[in-house]
Image 1 (cartoon, helix red, strand yellow):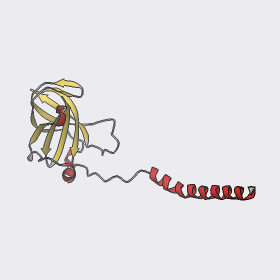
Image 2 (image 1 turned 135 degrees about the vertical axis):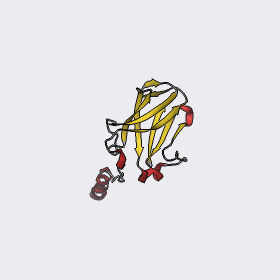
Image 3 (image 1 turned 45 degrees about the horizontal axis):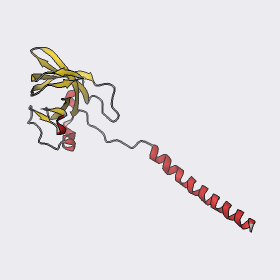
Image 4 (image 1 turned 30 degrees about the horizontal axis):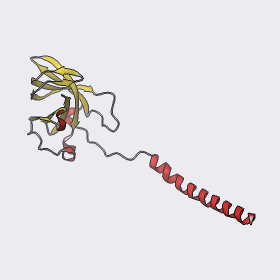
Length: 161
């Protein structure tokens, strides 16, 4: 009787070991990074600074953690890339913009640049017209979004209230 029990236990252990071995390649395959979709580089945002347009901020917000008063500002894209890079972002599509009033920089914030080729993938609202901008309070009244359409590319700035 003992021999049958020992044989049964050994058979069970060997069967279980075979199942574990068969699962190992699948587990290792799950740990490899998945291929990310390619992101088109925006041709006109390479490394240059440029004026994006003028926007009216209807209420006081924070830009880079500092207060930015309500008012009308010229928004200027800088050549400075936002660092540290966020995982999954593409080069040169996270940059700094400056809010300029009467020639003085009053604040700066990170802008997310959505190239024209990818605009349809992320756009849910009606975009601003070409060369125009849109300032919107987002759900919960926690963020003010400045959305600029320049050269077919979208520039999105999110400012905490």
